[in-house]
Image 1 (cartoon, rainbow, N blue to C red):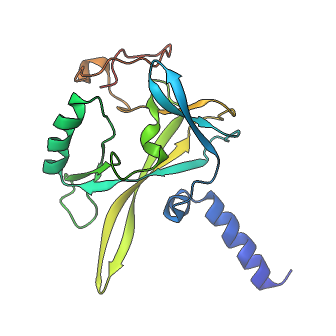
Image 2: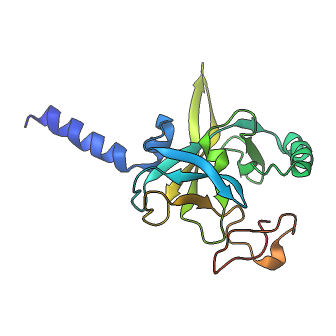
Length: 187
């Protein structure tokens, strides 16, 4: 092979393995199926086997300030809508500030993942550089990745409050995940 062809092959292989690159493409790289789950409304199911570590989809939606997110959260809770995802505000902001991704009206299949106390997916949060004339700012992006090998037909799930103990839960929504490690509460 020529050196140019080798560089393309190596670059393509690196991109396929790089979580940041995978999220930035905006693609949904595999078939995902939405269907009823019974007691938990609708859920997302794997349309093919998904190997551990694989990118599944980016979590997209409106990017909100803390104030607007808290207002919407109060309204959404009343209707049983729990789609908000807090993320670090980015390099140009106070390190303690957060923004919120709200896919309720403008989202994708990512908003349909149900909670499980023993999930088969995890999230990776990362900034995305955006250049506007001479100013470069960062906006947060979130990708879902397989924590374990996921068999075709399995429901895809995340932990809405990873790392929290029952004593740290606000006890707003009862959990119906059915996992042996169920904490009893979604949050």
